[in-house]
Length: 221
Ligand code: C5J
Image (cartoon, rainbow, N blue to C red):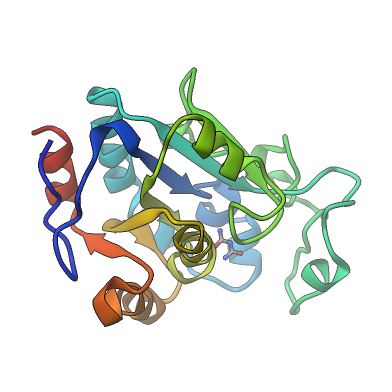
């Protein structure tokens, strides 16, 4: 397995300790009528990356490397939803309300599900997370430790919110983090670009960024 061509410099890939983590590729963020659209967002930015996220997931599966999925969601009784999160902004639908795809961002509801094209397969870890970061109030840290995972390759949405928050959490916990440019999206292209730039600035202060083809080539080497 080769190093991955990346910015700000090559990523020192280690087969025995790497996993792909796909953040929140859920119907609620990608499909018309979901939570993302209720906040006034253009969801086509998210649907545009689905084929590249799929290529990345299939690349990891093909060489037997672990794939982890996250879902931003809450308990049906909303006991893990702080009022400050539920009441933020002026969305047409709030978390927990009934929308066209069931209750918004509630565990088990149709809209909360991962897009069918990217659905986890048997044996893959799925982490339900109530926050933007995937380490907060979840078993992710213990799960990674138990499997000896020390490097995380990131994909998913949105770049500057749940992806970047989780990368920062992971970076502070000692993980080496790499974000795949074509496999992440924001509802605001300029925010995606800014997040990529700030992650790899100052010698990779949060982590590395790389292109999809370079990641696929390295894991297959
Ligand atoms: C947001 C996410 N943006 N997955 N969630 O609310 O980035």
